[in-house]
Amino acid sequence: MKTELDGANTFFEMEVCVMKGKKKPAPMHPERVLQFGDGVFLRGFVDWMLHHMNEQGLFRGQAVVVQPFAEGSADEINEQNGMYTLLHRGICDGRTVDEAELIGSIRRAINPYSDYKAFLHCALNPDLRFIVSDTSPEGIVFTEDDHFTDFPPSSFPAKLTVFLYKRFKTYHGKASKTFVILPCEQIDRNGDVLKQTVLRYARKWHLEQEFVWWIGHNEFVNTVADRLVTGYPQDEIKELTHRIGYVDHLINTAEPFHQWIIETANPRLPAELPLAQAGLNAVWTNQLTPYHTRKVRILDGMQTILTLTAFLCGKQTMKQGMDDSLLAAFVHKVLSEEIIPSLDPELAASEATKAYADLVPERLANPLLQRQLHRLVNHAVAQFRRSVLPSLLEFRKRHQYPPALLCFSLAALILLYKGTALDNERLAARRATEVFIVEEETDHVATFRDFWSAYEGTPASACQLVSRVLKHEPFWGMSLANTDGLAAQISTSLVLMINKGIPEALWLALQGKPAIAEA
Image 1 (cartoon, rainbow, N blue to C red):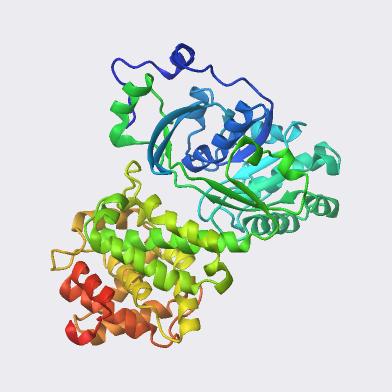
Image 2 (spheres, rainbow, N blue to C red):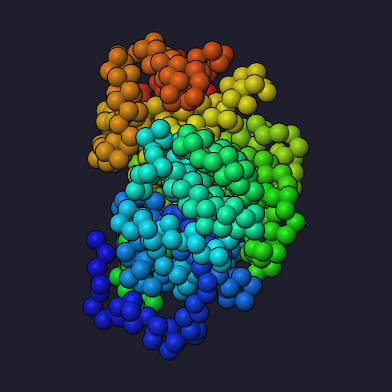
């Protein structure tokens, strides 16, 4: 629990602390950004960027944050007048970065579940121009149970539809009062998906055709938001509080690396949102797909693979996983020999891809981001499906045989969902696995429990278990049962893990010797 510490100022005294230091608090600006999402990512990414543009006099606008769920951080944000500390921590250009920065780009926060009228009232603001979002991995979804008259609707796209309708009615459908909408949800072509979901709500609710036409004049932008943001540094909070001199209940942590890829054909948008002019790593492009593929397959894929194997090896943090020579060798080999070769040849051969891939091990091994593996393994099926499965299937299609190390990682996922420690002491700790199960979605846990209940400890029953997992379409969005060689390769790795333990099984896989006979 976050508590105030002896000898530290409260956040209300922060302005005095800051004015005694190097800089004054940020000035107030008009609310130009509506932000759906009160979590750590947007505060460590978009809000930080807004702050830097404001610091240089380039944007002169603040965000009003909309809490997306009934429980959230709106009250804490308002208690701190929208201000919070962002820690930049990691390795940048060979030097260690550990800096604290006071961010003042949030004007206020609204909880629409307790003050829906205040949320809708924002639609009347003529200064409001941009809408950003990061609500959840499944945030851009259509929910049949959402109704126009709900107070409020549950899903983010439904709330956005009502908000846009309020704007449309207030300004009588003027094209000059439309928005630039930049979702940061980690899904492919997030802007297109959001637009189609909003249009679906408009039609479901039988809203005017003129409104449907007006929706099309808003610019729904596809983006890729790339930064590792780890949030509140609970384990270090006492030391950090004394270091910065005040209690901050919203203190946030992010790596130095950041990149925002924005797809647009609007030549005026880079001037309206002068990210690059402020020195930020923003890329404006008319073709987002290569950037999205690179980020998801390389960074997200490597993070998923390392998380699964390191957690089962008993590591506590991502850093501990990268410090292990065997796991580090696994990361480098699967990246260079299976993930990169699964990319489009032109993308795989580009210098930009090579430079990006070279940074990934360093980013994952960041010594100052204490990324707890028991948190990262949650929703492992969804993460694997999104970031690893495309590489696995593309490699199999292109090379006519299954990739051994990517199959090893899928075997690790299956073992992870067993839910109890096996006899071999080198496998996952029972307590850590039970914590994972409590936090994971119950339908996947129940399904895996059913699959594992039929396991009899033989290679044949392992193969049957793997076949059932591959056939289960709710996991993968398709059946993988007919992918030649896949079940046998995964079963081989799974038997090795069970009989020899993760480290020895991984060593054998790296040597190219994953024969079932050796198990």
